[in-house]
Length: 138
Image (cartoon, rainbow, N blue to C red; front, side, top):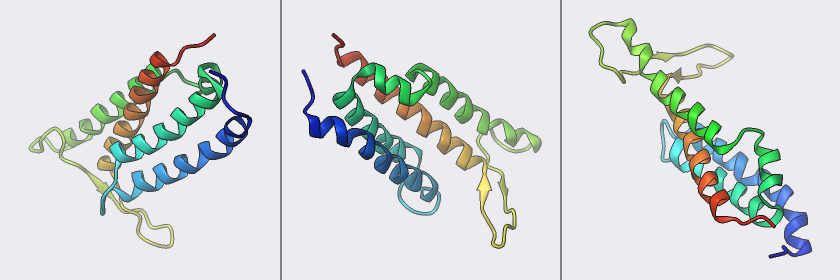
C-alpha cells in the first residue's frame, strides 16, 4: 500500500506532537492521571502513524534502537528502580526513595519516576514490535 502524499509529508511533523504529549503524561503521572503506561501508548501512536506512512525501515531510523532494545532498557530500569530500596535493610523491594533538589524550586525526583520511565520504554518497544510484525515491507 502506497501512502498518500499528504500522509507522507505530515507524518514526520506529526510524529513529534504525540512524543511531547507523551512526555508530559509521563512526568505528570506521579500526582495526577497519567504515567509510564499511558505516555508510552501515546508515543507509540505517533510511531505507528509514522510506520503506516513511511514504512518500517524509516521508523527504525527514527527510533535508532530496535523495539526489543527499548523493551530491554525499559525492563532493566523498572526492575532496577526497586534495588535502591535495599539501602534500608528493613524496606521492601519497591519502597520508593525521594529526593528534592532545589533548582529555584523543589523538584520531586524519585525511584517512582525511574520505574515509570522503564514502563514507558517497555510499552513503546512492545507496541512498535507488534506493529512492525504486522506491517509488510515490499
